[in-house]
Length: 131
Image (tube, rainbow, N blue to C red; front, side, top):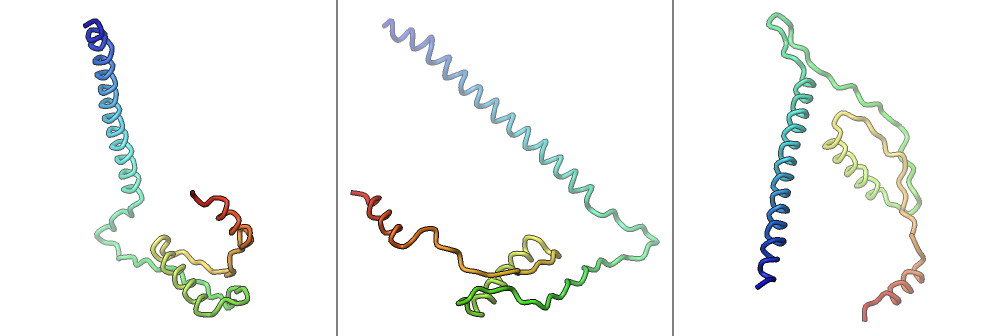
């Protein structure tokens, strides 16, 4: 019977304190996210161009013409032209989505070097195989 009193005196208040602290931390994180979100929205609103006045003529934004590069990328021996075209198209699609209006150029395309010899890899597989 004595152990039940000690459980009631130690465990129950301890659990209540822990859960109360968790609830407080949840509300603090929610408050911080709202404050940071408001700051980001305020910063984004400042970056938006102000509206044109009534008498002003509309201004059209023009993107600068990309620089034309005549040099083809340096390609390692053994890489076919289709692979170069596929890599270039993938980079162009990615750059168009992530950084529109930014110019870029592929400097070189090469195969990645092996991190370890084939025999070393086979030895590693043999020694780490599960039972």
